[in-house]
Length: 155
Length: 155
Image (cartoon, rainbow over all chains, first blue to last red; front, side, top):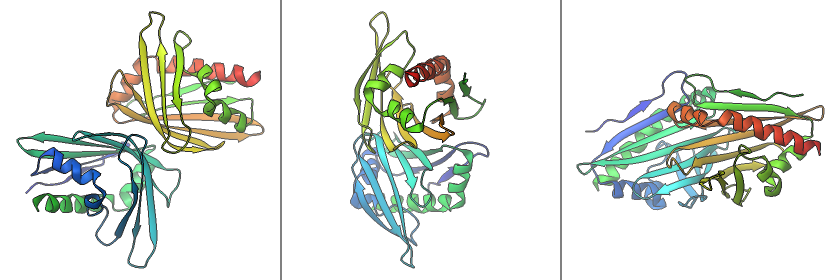
């Protein structure tokens, strides 16, 4: 079974999350760009996710809202810089609970021998922003998302 | 006279450019968001600049093309994540000569006693990308742009 690696080197601005999936890159890209599939991947399972918009073209906006078991809502939004089929997605990301702290995110899809490695690099404006995001449990959320993606691709 | 500072700390992902201007922040913000003014600021003076699009709203796209004295053209484009009047612009940036190397850029406008400090932070996906951009003469271009902005604001 493939393992998820999450790398947040001290004093860097980034978090790199990577995992290999047993699927061709068109299948994996589809899971990232089809809202009905993507909503199944996002966030830790304790939260319920709703995609409000997801316009996967350059300049398109996305927004999703997660709701915790007490009913509290958390909004996230951004814009797509690039959505290159089966290759790369580049987008901005902002948690509305801490407005003004924007990051950007490059997701690459690399296929070898029918398996696809997804590498997601989140780059923050400051190391403090990066550390703040890591402290929210970003790593376990990312592992859960990749686990669900592997399950979805196996179906 | 105010000085431009350009900071590109070794092994960081960013370049921070800053200068104080003798103008209120609404005037400075206007220069950044009105294409007729902005085109006068951009790039080193040896290049002629043309703004093809500049839709200063979240999700809006921008593209400009610079032409050198031999007629060679260089395109740049990105999208706006945020354009908050008199406060902040957050956008992505890509030089089309090296496609796939995207950075993001946060420009803040801070006014004190009628003077406005512009702080522009460009954050790159990798240190190599950052160093590559610095090696193109980004610093002198930034100084020239700020010099022209100061002249424009004095008019």
